[in-house]
Amino acid sequence: MASVRLKVSGMTCEHCVAKVEKALTGTSGVWSAFVDLDAGTAEVDFDDGKVQADRLAETVSAAGYAATVDA
Image (cartoon, rainbow, N blue to C red):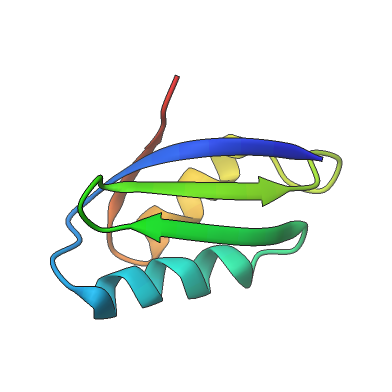
C-alpha cells in the first residue's frame, strides 16, 4: 500500500471535487481518494504494484484539472 498527495489546480466547486474523486477511485489499484477543494490537494491510497503516482496525476489531468505529485 502507498499514499500520495497530489496538488490539483482548476477546481472551483464541489462538483469539481466529485469529478476528481470519481476519476481517481475509478482507477484500478486505488483504494480511496479524498479531495480538499480549499487546499487544492488529493490524498490517494493505492496499490503501488498496480498503479504509480505519476499515473494518478495523469488521471486527474484527463478529467480536466492540472495535477502534480506533491513532493
